[in-house]
Amino acid sequence: MRYDLPLPVTRHAASVGARGVAGSVPVRRGIAVVAVVGGALSVATATPIEDRLPAPRDAGDDDATPFGLAASDKRVSTDDDSDDTVRADTIRAPKVLDTDALASAVRRANAEGKRLAEQRSGDDQDDDSGDDDSTASDDDGIVVGDGATQLPQEATPSRTASQFPSEIIDPENWYLTLPTGKKGSPDTIDAAKLASYHSEFFQLNQQRNGVVFTANAGGVTTSGSHYPRSELREMSGDEKASWDGRKGTHTMVLDQAITETPKNKPDVIAGQIHGTSDDLMQIHLSGTQLTVKYADGKKKVLLDGDYQLGKRFNVKIESAGGHVKVWYDGAEKADLPINSSTSYFKAGAYVNSNKSKGDSSASEGQVVIYNVDVKHT
Image (tube, rainbow, N blue to C red):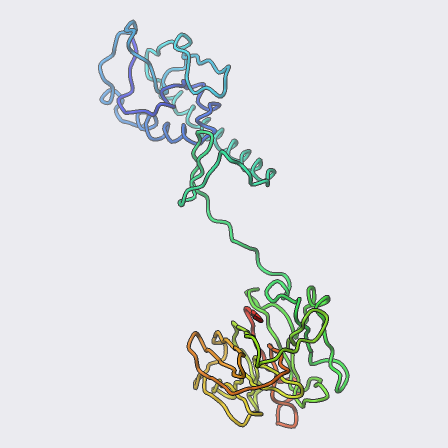
């Protein structure tokens, strides 16, 4: 006599016995455990079992195929691990549903499935070739290949947190001027050293997704300025950049935020086009007014009349045909008549205050740049 399970069972569950489940191919593919829990386990936990079983059938019926997890007297051939089928002549029908054996098999299947999943994870890490023509990914992240199906895993971040400012700002075409050094001759960091450079004046923010430029009011200045800076200066390879604003199109896009200003004179310049001896235009914060200043600071165009420190914004500066246009958060705000044959971009924190303006030496201006992109066509 034997009993058939009263619930539907998957093909994989039907093809193996209690002692063969834990080491079978379906378990390694993460399927058999689902079948066990979804089908056979529900039988083992049913109360009373007699109410869930159909009438017994004669073990001599040739058209009946015993399946499910039942008594321990089944024998399964496992000579070929790649074959999901079971030879019929190796199975002897159980006479009674053995719930203890079923529960034991479930535990073994779970343990084996976990072990094989860990082993597979280790194998995947060892093989980083990423070239498997038999495997494809669908939009839901489910991987299908070689007849096996895996549940999607959590997405891996596209990149890890940055370690140096140069991972956010490409140092290739810049050099950095610092508020340190000798009077009239501040320290500078060229492109080769900028790749691994960081300090209190040029470092990653706490989120490691932006570069913090800091200059103190008592810092060292250049010979042509009264104000300190932690600022990038555009380069062209090993030469200082100098392009003609009347020819071609020259663009700088900044994703940035001004996060601190000196206390007494709250002025900071976050980006500019400079000429041979003086600035041509500036992105200038004075108090809460964020403006574009030009004509040696005598004229200005308002970008934001109530700028709050820390507000992130996007500014695009484009020089072409003797004009400089400025977009603020996608909206065109200024079209300036600037006609210079020698120009270059600058970006960072140029602090328009010093001790003579009433600020202490330690009073700081600070700008965070999340991205800077320069193009010349």
